[in-house]
Length: 265
Ligand SMILES: [Zn+2]
Image (cartoon, rainbow, N blue to C red; front, top):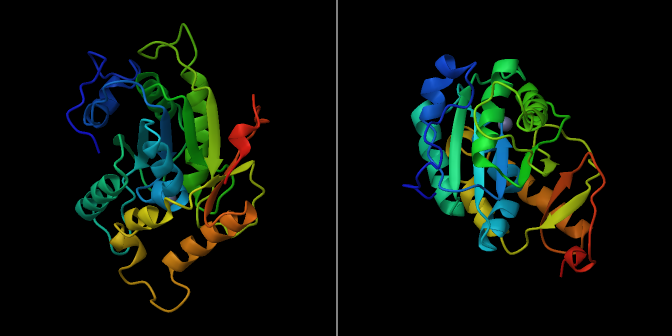
């Protein structure tokens, strides 16, 4: 993760309305120097790596500025602590060479797409100004994931509104796509699958940083959680004729200007 970037805005106040209650958390977010190309919004630390770590690494390799925003600390969990989770998250960020990472510190297990949360996230979107948002699919077994998806949709819309009480210049992130997490064992129909064949082992290196969530106290019998992650990625890779892939959904039809971008191999 890049550190030492300077915030381009003089005052990191995402919303006049929630300035007091959010001041500490928002001002503790790391500064960023210039807008991000891609912002991954996740309910918990480890969601981003497990779901789309390969896509993140691939985009970073292409020189894009990719950030991850967690909405909650992810704690409590059976084998974690705040300190442990922060250390694991920092290690995973370094393993991916991530551009930026922040945490909005909303309540874990009680995440709601509330107006205050929408204000905070919309204000942050005006600062980070990503061209693409990647967030949880709208259907999930984990209520925090569903809330994160709804909150992101609402905040993206609010961020563009003029004559609002949000700080910063109105901005509408042009694209938003949704990734699947590991809790809901359904059979999704993705809009596209991102080829992560070359990035997959590096993704797993980042995923394994989350020992308290994926290794400690877990069964070592096949199939482990790590086996599940690999097998799902292999399935999606198979579906597009490559080794590994990560699927995404889109609410809207995806337009293209040339066929070249559709070529995987
Ligand atoms: Zn999660």
